[in-house]
Length: 452
Image (cartoon, rainbow, N blue to C red):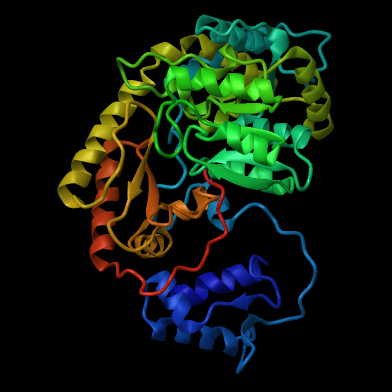
């Protein structure tokens, strides 16, 4: 039985700890969109194996004595979606290129003479290699944000950038303002630091009032090709938000990871950092080049960058130097790689198929980005995701991206994959939707999963 096998794995891996209370038969059946007999049979099998106990009045629990344990931030869905699967399931969870562009191999070829010429260099660069910091600074300057290398810290991807900032700026119990919905990886980072998350509409509308009421430690925003809605914050709103953050002395983290994913003909909006001194920008090559390169960065005032470098050195001393040398050749090429044109073509292909096969699904019109924020006409994303998984495709339910609990009827679907894969994805989604039966009771609140 698939359900019993999955629960067995969660129990054996410790994701369902000893003593954990499991949902009642009917509630779990509704949440997973399966028959109650399926849940009963799974529970009976697990009880016969000694993995769970069932007692009248105390419910169904994982067998064993409960022990105090730290709540690990990484959801098993997240971990499973980061590696290639061999079970035939299509992963529509992690929005990232499925293969590196040829320019990456060419960049590594170009740095061979640089590597062979290294002498008297131990290779630790807590700030990042100067050549890459200089290239990143030049790109900010090119797009209206004068920057020098001393204002740039290179990280192992955008996720490490967020983690370093959370460690530097957030203490347990601090308030953090974030958009609802938003990038779930950021929410997990802030939760790991013990932050109290407060959700505002996309674009942080209502920021000034929230600052007066909450006195947050920081705010987090994705102003360009927002993940997951694809929204782009207008220029006047950028100015107002950045200046309000500066006036209130609230650090404002501007996530620019999707900013290089504009469709052809779209001008790149000026970064928030151009309008306010309290803005801290983060970026990455994971979406525009390849996640395996593990290159990200933070742009901020030079004294704060020095503070982050000291913190970073405690964790890993520095990043991969060959990767940084290669990235220094790639950053100046970002505008010529035609990533946006590829994404626009795939977006058009996906939306054409959805209009034909799933016409009741609703999603915003996009000018860039890599994901669709889809509103289902009935039911909820958590239970539909279970049905979709049984039909061979993994999608991200909207509940895990929204700290205000108002996106339960959404799913996130990315189009950073070849058209043939998108066609098969829609085929499986269509079959899943026709088989789906919306729960008649409120869905079980799901612990948000990290996703990229």
